[in-house]
Amino acid sequence: MSQIKTKINKLIAFAIFVILIFYFSSSSTTNSTIATKDDKINKSSQFKKQQTNPKFQKKVKATFVTLARNNDLWELLESIQSLEDRFNHKFGYDWVFLNDEPFSEEFIYETTKSISGETKYGVIPFDYWSTPIWIDTDKAEAARQDMKERNIIYGDSLSYRYMCRFESGFFFRHPYLDDYDYYWRVEPSVKFYCDIDYDIFQFMQDNDMEYGFTIALHEYIETIPTLWDTTKEFISKNPKVLAKDNSLDLISDDNGETYNLCHFWSNFEIGKLEFLRSKTYRSYFDYLDKSGGFFYERWGDAPIHTIAAALFLDKEKIHFFDDIGYYHGPFTSCPIKEEIRTKGRCSCNPRDDITFDSYSCMEKYYEFRGLEKPAELEKYQ
Image 1 (cartoon, rainbow, N blue to C red):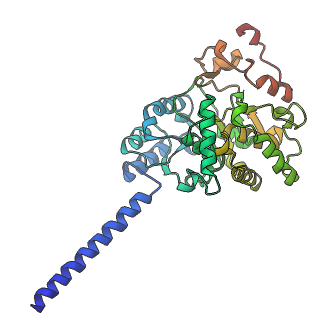
Image 2: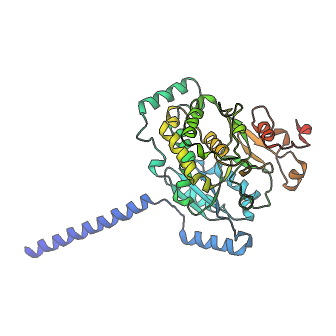
Image 3: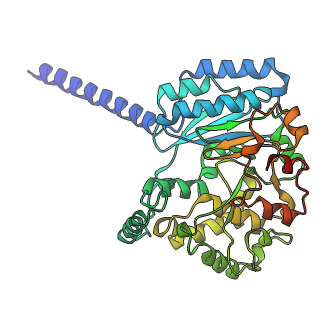
């Protein structure tokens, strides 16, 4: 009888041991922030890509970064193919994908095979994609309902607010961005219309640029009624954060009393991560975040990035890419200069370009920077 009990005890101990192994191994898999179809194949293929093309021996630590969900795959592949064909097949830069849930094997396979550089797939931490504890959820819900009744775009969406907050203050904190100095944001369903034969990231680094854009628009005032007042409160408490040669006159028509709503459309942006990681920017974001405007209103990342770049950077560190044909529905930035169009084999219609349309802020930008409009403009207006 004692021998039977001993065998039973051993079997129970072994079963517990197996259960513990399974538990910890599954927990490790669940909490992983990277997914890959096959590590050995991935690493081998990327190594071969970089070894066979000397242009891939890049000097700049830079990456594309995309916030996407699994159901964005096919629209995103169009964006990837467009940017790879027009630019990245020559340079082989990496691509970081971020999601609030794990990427599917299909998503990983389809995107990895389409990209010249290394691909990384990260899961967003809960704190980066949730409602902070200091937010009055009843007040926030009432605000969403009010905006819904007023037909304000994305006014009733909580997930859209999570996205705007994440892009404003957290994407650059994800550990997969730690290895890089520059980023280029790319979204699903965008198009690139012109060949880009020079290294954009090298250009940013060589010219000490910290923020680049292609389209500038006016924001909906209904979504950010108190953003500028909150910004002015922050500046009054931290006056030394203002850059000496800032772009205040670009975003305000009355010396800072009010915000003229001009913002760089952030679905396309190329930036230096050091700027977003700086104490100044992070302090500014934290101040905005604690005010609750992401949830009690519907603050977007575009005006926040724009205001920060305009106030905290010297104007020479902001660059308008007039040679990158770009589309994100419903707007198109299409080079008008014939020289650029010919060299880049641009396929967009210059008559679709919105750069100098009334709802664009580029007229203001050209005036502020003292730039000459393209001689071909009259031809296409």
